[in-house]
Image (tube, rainbow, N blue to C red):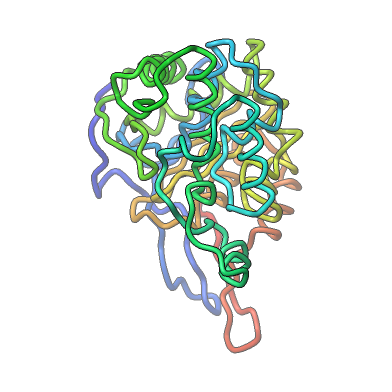
Length: 323
């Protein structure tokens, strides 16, 4: 296995936008589908290319938190795994999580931000609201970090330091699940340490999580299933996908998504130019192509999550996967 940073030649065409039966735009990407054993069932592009997985790492970070013995409710665990849309419901639930574990919003070190969802941002603007740490899409993960530190009697003020006991535990957990030592590290947009993996390793890690062979994996899977709204938001891609096929679906910034089915088949997608519009469609198409989800489930989700191409008021095309 020869790992290397992502390059322009590592991708292949995985989706195309069609206008009036003519291809208007192409998306290059890398796609890997893996089973629990680590065997790749499908690979498109160079799956040994190393990327920053961004928020697709959150389920692995949540499993590291659980390993400390911290007592999360199912909703709190789902929020700790979330890239949420910043709705009022999310902000109130994260505030409750913090208070339940004897910490507060003032301890959050994620940056202030507007809600990720456009409708939620518009609602906050109409109310005269301002960017806040609670509205930032990673605030649930940061709240989980703080709760874990409080439980473990670790320092709260330095919880984002790469040398903090929590972050060391997370790095170890990521390597264990991926079967690959992270190639290099940086800092994510939310301020937490960010560790690079190959696309294939990310798919293998999600397959292991989805297999649910440990109590903590089962705990995470049940929490996400029962609180899918918390992971993303009502009507949004991850939540709709989880409600339809089960498992976990997790977006990551810069053209990433990773999913696992309840049977433990994992998929990871990286779109080379960082666009998000094709990620979920391509991942679902990849799962359908290896029989991990039914064609009926794929078709239904593709219709719900469709990206229409319009000519005036008429739909004359759309986005389609090319796997």
